[in-house]
Image (tube, rainbow, N blue to C red; front, side, top):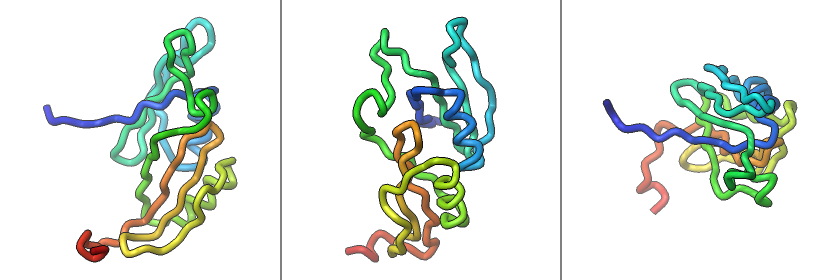
Length: 135
């Protein structure tokens, strides 16, 4: 088996977050495991070939969302064929713009903050880009 890294988000309102990610980014829900207290203990979404796991906050275990911590320290990068369309759809679904869409040598993209405090860099990469182009 190979090695993978999967983002695992702590969310205040995981059920609502799942619906947001489906509307905004076209995520597909793989499954969710509800807890008897109503919180989602674990869920998995697919974004194309990538998996993102998420669960409700668990303050009793120190697992808090960006909304409880006062911001996020991580950005998720969503590479798509048409960042303009995805950006517009995400804003319409409730995301706020942190950095507007711009063109750069590496591609076109911008930053969004989802309603749950997570930062998403939505971008369409430039297939011709080489890192030495920035040197």
